[in-house]
Length: 470
Image 1 (tube, helix red, strand yellow):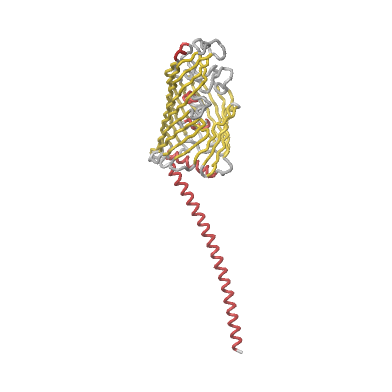
Image 2 (tube, one colour):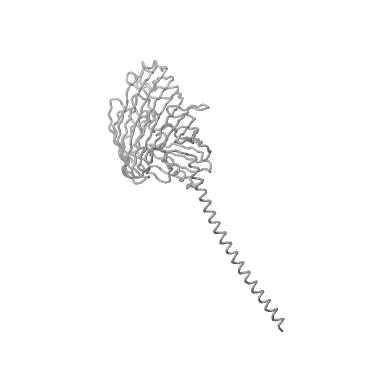
């Protein structure tokens, strides 16, 4: 009787032991799953930290020791790029309008300089140059996005006085390495300081006379082509650039030919001085060629005549910018000083004509040599004294310099004049997206005319918008 009972007890004990083992296994499996989840979360967190560290290192490698403001703007730009969807471009709209009170100057232009943006005949034939009262002025529609990890693209459609045009449309490299950057398409040239900036980022309602004389009232030189930049791995910010393109815009002209119609080279140097100051200086050279570039002149009898230039135009620019902000924080107070200087030489031939048959001195179409050397400069200071208010002053002067019209000197009036302009402005910004500006200018760009101008301007930005240049 004892033997069967013992066997049953052993069997029962064995079954109990088996049940306890299954429970333990389940518990172990649960613990393993929990550990897997915990480690997966920790690994994901470490991978995220690694990616952020690599991104910061990439920024430092691309701009080793540039100024703090430039680095901050680069980081801001990279953040904007990273947050942008790869397939949905950032879209923004810039609304820029104004009210302008000034004299109705027939034939408005800059005395002693060829009108780069056209010629106002006093009847509104060239919009914008002589427009008074209310106007929408300049509107920009911007599309931008990363194309893939290697490229970024941007297009800006600008509308001025009811006419829309492709102001910029380019692609840009993101990671060629060794500090090399490549841009292709239509872009604002890297020459000078102000040239790359769009009108809504200017500190005054209009471009300096120097830029109007060099490139027209739009105040910038853009071309279709290729731009190559190299950021040197040096203790100071040191950048070199070269561009080759169609060269169709003034001072060049559009031509039906192969090859390049214009090119530019530039170099920029900058750095920090303590915590509160940083600076940048640069030198640039632009070379273009023109064929049948039409300009309006006055003949010796005061009648309108047309001149057609064919030859080379070479422009040198020098620029300097100094920025100050307490402890390097520009949010509450900051000051910016900037100045640029240019010299332009043009050499070729000019044909003088009487296209409108007004009976001027060029009715016989006279072709002669054409050589000029002209220069100009401006200096301005902007002080932001509260987070919302800024005030600024600008003074500028041009020199019509040497103008040798060859045998056409007997037919055309050769003006010798030094145009001047003094401007004061104050603006208020509710945020970085909205600003109004009041500006007063005493304009003596036309010989014998003192034009006191008042401009009330608004600038509104809708949607995502990339960081601005230094």
